[in-house]
Length: 132
Length: 155
Image (tube, rainbow over all chains, first blue to last red; front, side, top):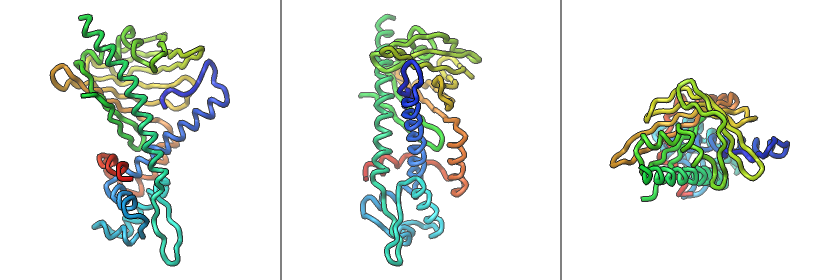
């Protein structure tokens, strides 16, 4: 992501592409921020393994108030990690798998990019070692 | 053992660590000696054209990655450079309104190996405000990403 797709000049198309890239990075940081908390990751884990659950069911997993758990669900919802729909008197919480998967894909492509750069550095360091 | 990059994503920053089969001193040198720097910076198949490279506290750099007929130019200022230990610099893609603050630490591990720790902090005000709004609802929740791998693996 660090190297935007730009040639000699910033054409409008490329600028738009680059902004989309940037927006994606920010979305991703919001997603990881949402996931990077013990309570929220437990909620995601539970939804991933056992399917949709009500707020009450999720709150029963933790020794914290229903209100606190609701706040965590709101953070997950704001980041697009979960959604809630009305079903009679209940509002089951649903895991947006695609969202989590796209975060994983983003992470993987960042890792590949960095690893490629550092493999070049590995080679340079090995050459330096042979010279001295 | 094949070295791999470990990446963490935080509210307004991205950090990673990578181990090298070389002491911190050598990895540091690869970052501050322009002759060595151009041999690894940028994707494979590209070349690096250095215009300015004063890797010392208060110094600055400007270089272009050349690919086909195109050039990607980057520049920044060195805020602190401590030999074999630390580099703090800004980093900006020319034409990009979102510079980052980069902190690189060079740490010897054992038997001639070392670890590079890089923290990139984004400086977008919008992004920052958005993230601060998150924090207000949580009261300074401790950021812990150690379990993220588990979570992602389970999905």
